[in-house]
Image (cartoon, rainbow, N blue to C red; front, side, top):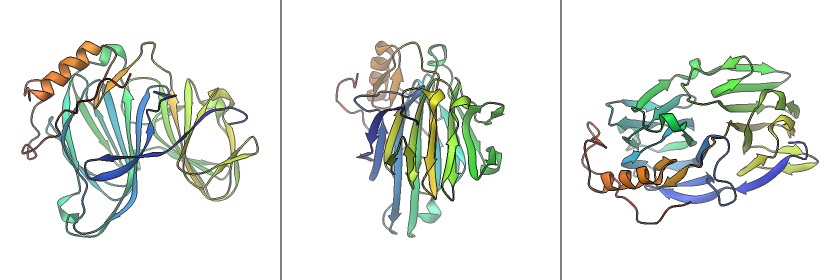
Amino acid sequence: MQSNVGLIIEEKAVSIGNFLVGRLLPFRQKRAVGPFLFIDHMGPACLEEHQNLDVPPHPHIGLSTLTYLFDGAIFHRDSMGNAIEIKPGEVNWMTAGKGVVHSERTPEYLRTKDKFLHGLQIWIGLPKELEQCEPAFSHFDKEEIPVWEENGVTYKLIAGELKDIKSPVPVHSRLYFVEIKTKSSQKVTIGDQLFGEVGMYVLNGSVKIDNTDYGSKQLLIAQNASLCAFETNGETTLYLFGGEPFDEERFMYWNFVNSDKTILEKAKENWENQNLEAFPKIPDDDKEFVPLPKPKFNN
């Protein structure tokens, strides 16, 4: 990003349920990029017939989740009654608001077969006035997501806005999450379309910025979004994400996000006590749940 790389974050391995993922955000030196608070890179993994993704019912408050798959399938269920399979190129968008419970599992028809799983799971903070809003859910087929090509570069606007193009995903603040693909070396100058803070995640291939090559499993944070320019080194897939940061600090405990720690404490208490008014059960997936972990605040 044209002498503009302020921070390089290496992907680090963590576990969710019985699945190993690469965690990109949050990081000690950088807690958020614009409204983006959390990014997990799932896979790529080949799961055998006895291996499945099983993340039992767990709660969220104060954020929206975005699930985007490159390969495989995940079945989403939530306490609002939604039950839907997400496949590659589709977008699941769930706004937790004051509280929601969901589970993520391998679909039934794949549970006794070999399968692949690869994708991104992202948390995006909510504006302060919406942190306690009613939960909501949207699903978008891949044909609904804007895709265009310019000068040998293919763009896909998964969420948010770039100039006069807008994704149908109902985001709650100014942001962008865009996929960029090239089949050969290309120069990309996109800074005039960006705003706020910007991060770059190179999924495969590599990019050259100020005569330095950066490869996959690295998250690059720009110092100035308006200077975002780079060159891809051949066949490359990368993601740019970011937007306007919030004025207030966001605190995070486990799956709970809020600008008010007292609300986090109440959410912890409600989940530990299985308060069904705050966190209803999921239809057809109500036999287990992920218990509240015990560590202190991350902030």
